[in-house]
Length: 627
Image (cartoon, rainbow, N blue to C red; front, top):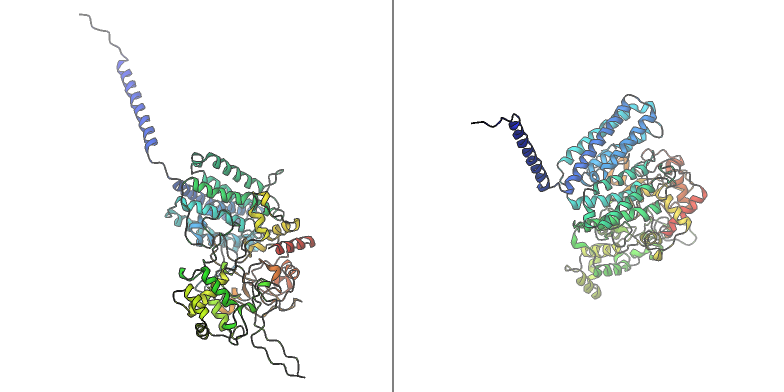
């Protein structure tokens, strides 16, 4: 029998076939696993990117630290600082949202802070270092710079540790993104956090680029391809607007057209981000905030809640309480002598002020015939406008009370103002049938001291004025046919207010008061160095908030008021020292009290001259009148 020939490669071929089959099965299994396994949720990808950005920030701060330590050239150190700030802007929208205290430590104002326990905390972070490095980095500042940047690295590491355990949700991510757009408008483009280096515009571009990158984790194109394309174009346009078309370099800080940026770019972005959130089916928060969580832009009508700053929800205004409070506001029944009303010092025709340097006291000395002239008695401070008082977290120029109810009782019982008594007023009101009926309609408790105060506070909360020609111009940016026009001076004045004039770094857009964006939860005070008389030879003796706290940062500190309706509220400052807005503008242009020559170490107003020319001052005045 003849045997078959042996094929020497048959076993090798079988092994190869088994290998190829096994390999194919393995590849298919890997593919199938990759296809079937749950993909990371967008919020998880956002967090991963955020953590990577923190690592990049740490690296940038480390390089800055090394440059300072080994005494590299001032230019090299400044470049390293700017690079680190750009890295910080990549994390800002999430860190500011989830870790506000650590974020403040990294990038808060270079001012000591008095906390709720009246402890004075030294400033730290980028803004402290910025003032050491810019405009020039002197050798004698090297030691302070080394110490400051070491603290910054520690805070970056603290941010990393805190962030590791934070669970991001889609709703929070989109909320944080829109708040970052609002932060860019109200603080970024104004130079609030880059007051010396004027590096604000590149940093805004970095913040926007970070938002766009994080947004890419959401498959918006699948939900709405047109909206996705519009957002891509909006981000590109906004970032491009921060650069000149010809040189692709960042525009000069003073010349940047902030009005156009807000109207044509920032407002478009915040609106489209809200549309994207809705298109993706991500819930929008409906919780109570001063600034509505559903706000499309910062100038949209009705987005600020005048009933937010109340002690309890039961104290929120109602139409009945507002109407009752209005009647009480104009009724002398609350005063001790039955001759003065709230409207005596807060007159509607003067935007609820009285036109006096400081308000007249209730009781005036009797003038005897033939006797010497008797000095008119006044209270110590100027009567502020009541417009938009509801949008302040504290009341009175020295911030001594939190709620408008407490402001009402303070004024009624003050001997120089109303010289009244809440218990007496309650008894007097109970004798009136009309008041008994109206209180019963507004409050289940009827006439009490608490309901009396709340009725007055409810009326004051209704005095909302956020619809000037400036608001209307910005609000209707995409509807030219409805757009109210502003003059060239008014437009220039807006840009000066928001930029070179540094006004908006204290009078924050769009409330133009001291309530701090984008959370709008606290209202700041400032030390300006206001003189006692218009000749500017002596600092005013009123120490302001210091009386309340006895802390040096608050000596001569006064709450930052709104400048809306400012053309109607002369004279100006807490002591009414300036009769005209031109005088006020000149005071700020000189650098406040320090510019006048006062030795005021705790002045919070920048002491550098603004160097506004005549045309710029005229334009700034035109804008203020347009408010």
